[in-house]
Image 1 (cartoon, rainbow, N blue to C red):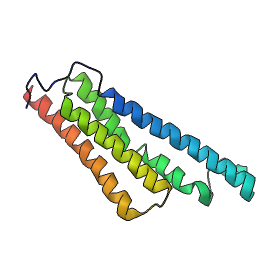
Image 2 (cartoon, rainbow, N blue to C red; image 1 turned 180 degrees about the horizontal axis):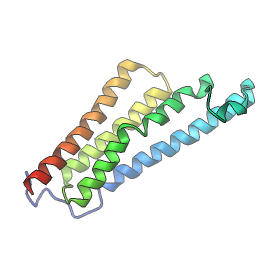
Image 3 (cartoon, rainbow, N blue to C red; image 1 turned 120 degrees about the vertical axis):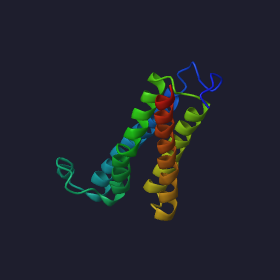
Image 4 (tube, one colour; image 1 turned 180 degrees about the vertical axis):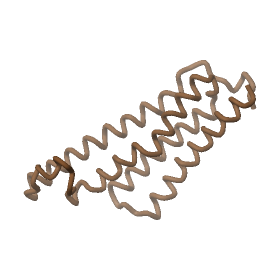
Length: 145
């Protein structure tokens, strides 16, 4: 499995990280838009955001999902960088990284729309498994190099 044919000489591992960063940017924009609508349309007091004691119903799902983007994804980003700098990246790790990011986009969509746990949990588990496999590959690579 550690064949030179599987190794890459590119920065392809970084594109999934960039794609995830754009998801976070989209969510920040969505959060701001929904909060402003709550202030404008529902009379929500903007001072509530000073210490974030209460989130309007219109934006609570986006706020919660945005917090999710700084939990498991931190392990993903650290793993991508570790895989890249240790030259352990290959077509499989790149595919796993894309699987993670696609699962995060799908998870975010479900979370900020229907928020159905029966859909959210499997999408989370796909990303979780992709991250575990990336870290597992890194451990194998380092142990056998």
